[in-house]
Length: 119
Figure 1: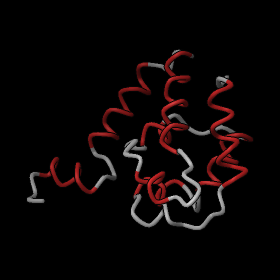
Figure 2: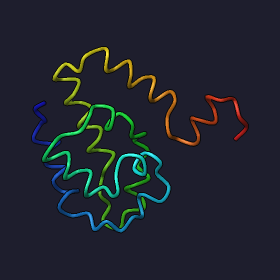
Figure 3: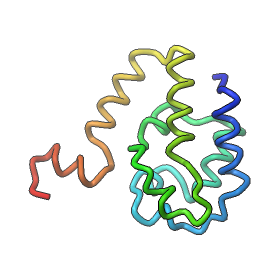
Figure 4: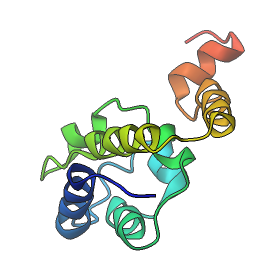
């Protein structure tokens, strides 16, 4: 997979700047599921790549940026990854699994709504 310069730059800033303070991890079930800290996740992206399900699992809510003392934009990096995956022709089969994953998301809000529970 070949990523755009924008995506590489966004990921590099996070990989090189994140202090692993953990503030973004506290309330984000997505980050808790996929990494020990964002620095590690973005270093992995830059060296090995990530499965397509990872950037599509982020809800793009921006909460990570709000709580980050450095205002790192993880959501923008994941959105850029998604754009690149689509441009490269992410197979429809993988998109279907992403849709199912998002429907059954790790988001407390959407999981509760999908089950019909009261908020």
